[in-house]
Image (cartoon, rainbow, N blue to C red; front, side, top):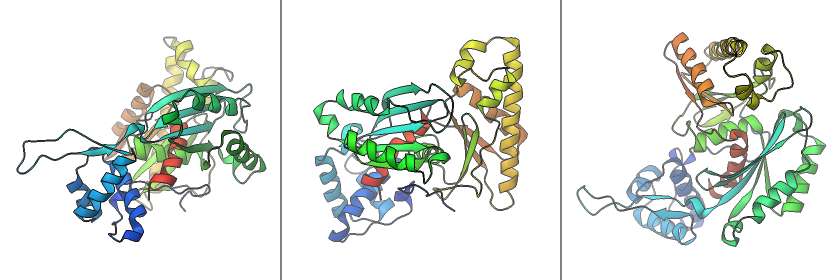
Length: 358
């Protein structure tokens, strides 16, 4: 089933598969439709918007003028060199809206502020005193307040909300409800919840390397490895939410340490002989896991693309993708485009999805 245990659902590329209506009563829907289209395809002319949505030229003109007046959409430079008048591409205005994203992880909590096109404006990391995926760092509230306090008045009023990405352990839990209520009370912004891996997959589809992909298998490498299946732009979770124990904790064990933060591994061990051997062995395990998952899915659906997301150095992920491509026929494997806090960025996309997209 679709992974919709938290709200809102994931309106990925909704503009490509929904037709707009010209009735005045659905103007809000049509505005959201245009915004979703511009998010997926920046630099789009009014003519192209009409072709993709089915809206009339007059309706598009009214909508674009309204969105431009509100500061959500901006005009690009006129493009000449074709028959007829020059076309003027329309894009989302990065300053049109902002959002806070918070991701609670195994050893750290990450807080980001992103603009309307997914660019990370501020990134804060809060290290946990002890490892575990159930800790609520006490500085979440002050860190979020400090980020908002540093914004200009113009930017602050354009913050759409807070997205909170949480591991499975928080699902339907009392601590989750307390955390949401406390955030809304202290920060005075609406909080939107989502599973952390699902949030990362949604963020990758909205802002990252998977923006133009319809169907793919998404893997997130953290302390452990998690996967999601995306079919026709909808995120699905497996029947079992149990993660695969070949993540960065496994790499640490291969190096004989359970107390080194994963993002320190590269600095501390790079160049040492045992690091190269342990890294190669760990990458091999990751490749075998992904191949096994592809074979399992192959009984039901043909998926030929893998997207690999993580906060570890991109070159490490690229090597895993290269091994996959060499070992598997007709497979495309790419590294996710969200290199900074992918779970938190995915969380920050939730208020945008709820407030501005269909």
